[in-house]
Length: 339
Image (cartoon, rainbow, N blue to C red; front, top):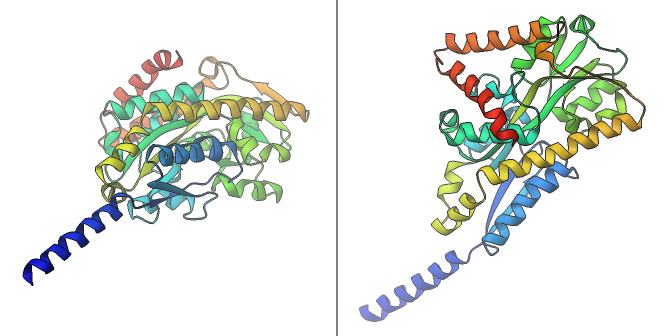
């Protein structure tokens, strides 16, 4: 009788093992971009499809766009705490949490999203900023293209023209620079901008061309100043607990779809959207001015350089003595990553 029970238990265990090997796992991905946007479809949906293909259907990714699973300012914690298995968010939504990462946002570093993705991912892979993500498993990092100034009714040519204007700030770092130039920085998630601008809650915003198109902000603005004073940093990251629950084979699928290849792919999508966003503004007859070299411009160089210095000094006051070295390295990576 004992032998019969043992054989039954072995058979049952074997059946259970087979079921677990072929079991389907669904991973929940949260982000803030609209479902129909190229950002969602050409980056996040494409990533999900690749993971499903590489896992032979064992891994499914269920995407929650437009802050439907977690609000933008809580998105990273949602992954840390397991509310989402994967999150894609801008580090600027959690002010002060990723201080070394946000160095890449500073003026003069990012000229394109592809270049920015290369710089940021390199800093992570070489250990310069990796410690800021010890509580999750980073898939890949990338950036927006340069962000510019866009307004409804006020033409901006110099910092003095910002005096008193209510401008949506993309991050604390960028907000401080806006404030130093006389603007009144306002904080809000990207999906809320259209309504706020439409209702006159603010006068303008700082955004890359990509976001002007994706969030339909071009429809409400008439004036644009291309002064590249910051770029948004973005992380796609996974709950460590969710990753560890996967089999070694499925972990390998996630690992194969992490790193520089996907960082650059995301950058290329953002670059294409930047071009399309600017073309949209041109087509609707908007006024567009450009400051080609703001760090050499007599009007813009002062506040931008001072903004950079203020930020680096603040990091040093926090004991982050490596901040200036990381800033220098980010600047040095520009040429390599441009290629």
